[in-house]
Image (cartoon, rainbow, N blue to C red; front, top):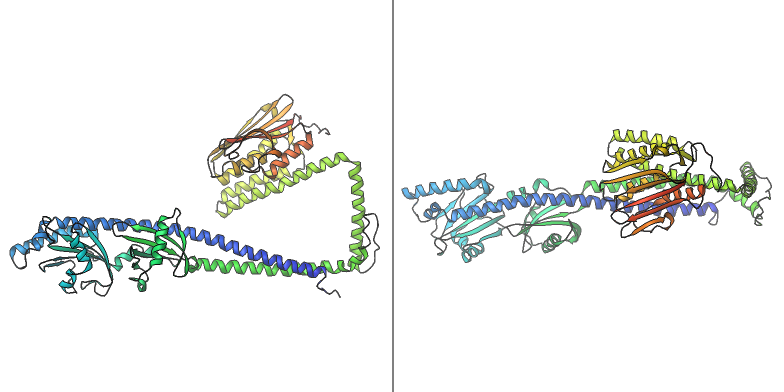
Length: 594
């Protein structure tokens, strides 16, 4: 029985396979996860930017409403008179209070005071207070008047100051953090006689971004000192977060949608925008691996790759064992065939598998000798064989590109276009399978129209193709599928950013030559300008010619000689012109040997 030692062919092949499959699986898994992760983060960051833009706009409108409210109250006579009466039972005081309430009611919708989202508090230096929503102070008046934000308003009576408080100072906001706007009110530039405070609760601040947050994105409002003003995580509100502030500032200064930074020991992607008027930064911190989608994708890719690797190793190992076992025994009988004389026949002996392999080997040697003799005796057939080989090289290339386009349509759910593409593709395959080396210009143009239909179904009508064919050329012969590679190059390379463009095809006879020109107005060869350069001498950068273009040039020269071929003219940014020069061959004429 065959034993696979460390030096056996079977062992070496299996070990090579194990290493190759393991490496390929690891690389595939890594690239797939990196690619999916990058795309997922890109999507999340763009989504976060839109969220921030919307929230920032709403905060700006609220900030402008707060400014307008304070400006109106500073100049309102009822507000000034209200704080001049300490006895609120006086008729004048009652009428003034009613007027002030009407003024505040007219301002309420803009800042959200009427529906309870904000609280307006006004305190006079004489001890008179005014609070909306039937609220009352929960701290001594002296403590409020000596607070930092009140002193800041006193020092600059014309300004508006925003401040974060861990605890509010009204009964409705007591025990919860608030963000407030504070402003002093003066009369004729004298000392302030009252102070206005507009308090925003955490509920309102969170409403700007609450419904738009997700499991992978955390939003936070951070002030210039690095204090977290608002977050869906109540446990971090009021804490210092200098790393988060630094990341937010870096994201605002960057020239791309997001940056990657280390925040509290975690690698995160950060988007941020400043909030006008309030001196805050609304930042989004993206951790893609917290998303169920990313975790599910990782598990799926890992499981799929592992299953494919295991199944591949098992199947190939079984096949290798069946192949290498008889070969191991046969090797000893083939060792003397080192002289290069393929005419020597090996003795047929051994088990059935070995005898069959030996017979196959002897037949192969005989066929090789016959083939060599035929090559020597039929040089002209060699040329035909080379041309056929070139034709067969371009077919898989074309078929692969076309099937990729149809796959793309099916993936997008465009079944109607996919069906039309398959019909056009079937007609092209039917023409290609005919086995003829030449076709008429009429047939070539018809095939090109099917190909153009395939590409326009995929890319839309941004790329147009016009056929300018001299009727006298329709029945002339030319190599089959000789023009298609250049039309394909124009579709795939001349318009790299999806620009609109026009491809012109001209076919006519000049003298004793059939001329076909494909001219596009696309990108051309970047930074280059040349005229009528043979395909083999094209620059290696820029517009790519590909295997189809090279094969087309080789086919023309093999069929008709070195006097014919393909040249290219191009200018960067203005387009490319490809000229095919072939002899005039009437329909039904035979090719002459060159």
